[in-house]
Image (cartoon, rainbow, N blue to C red; front, side, top):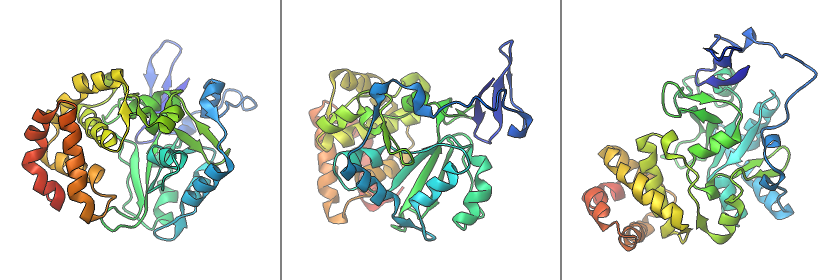
Amino acid sequence: MLTGHSGAGAPIIRGQFGREHRPSSFLALRVLDPFKRQGPAWDHLPDTSLWEPSESEVSRFDAALTTKIPPGHEYIDLVDEIWNRGFEVFLVGGTVRDVLAGESANDVDLVTSMPLALALDVLRPMFRNDALRVHPNTGFCRLGGTPASGDPFIDLKMVCLDNLGTPNAQFGASLQTDVVHRDFACNALYYDPKNKLIVDPTGTGLADVERRKLTLVSERTRILNIDAAKIAIRFFKFVSRGYEPHDSTLATVRNDYIVELASMPRSQLVGYTRTQILSKHDAASWPSKLNDFRQVMHELGHAGEWDRYFAPVLDDIARGRP
């Protein structure tokens, strides 16, 4: 039985005695019954997880997807290339949250069931980048512009099953397992642009966007220490923007995530904090954004962590120095 694939695009199958096998190519496999196909990834979720967006929301999604990115394609062009090869692709994360909140969406993030190693022959000429690679441990590649250039770009990831960020990472098509590698329910919403459908696997994402709440959906045992530290930084960022954490989320982040700031190398702390807190704002507002971040940490009882991790590198964060 096919259970997923590696970051390098090798299928992962489990035999009848429970042993795992990894053939070198999907061509080694065949469909048991070609007349019995599985439905979409969201077909395995309860009906309460599926929502039809309003006409205005569809229009905002369409506007985001028809934005041009270097070297001249629209986001929807990549969606079509993946879809027309028989795989699913979803808008995910902040893009979906911002559209549903009526806010302006920035860069588009996509997640797909397609093994991206198999897509390189399409992606390289499409984006005129012969050096394009997919990181096998994270299932990630960036297409189009760069944050430094200011040009729009696409963060494209594969749907994660297990061991994200490690050489044993596994990918596939299950949104239920992908979602536990994300951070908060409001950022764990998926939009199917071909079927015009919003997918809320946690069942709380849409309500959290509407009420500006934070509900942790990440499973600490399934993410790396460095990723837990990143979630801690994003936690303070969202609270500084007016999101209110549920009591259980506050307790879990406080006990299991903030402590991992100690595992973050200084250069990553500087770069990641700058990206999360400052990069999408005018430079004139940076001092106030950093002050909001500091104030939230103090108000939530983490002045010690501010003084230990962020205060010593504050100038570097503002200036973009590692």
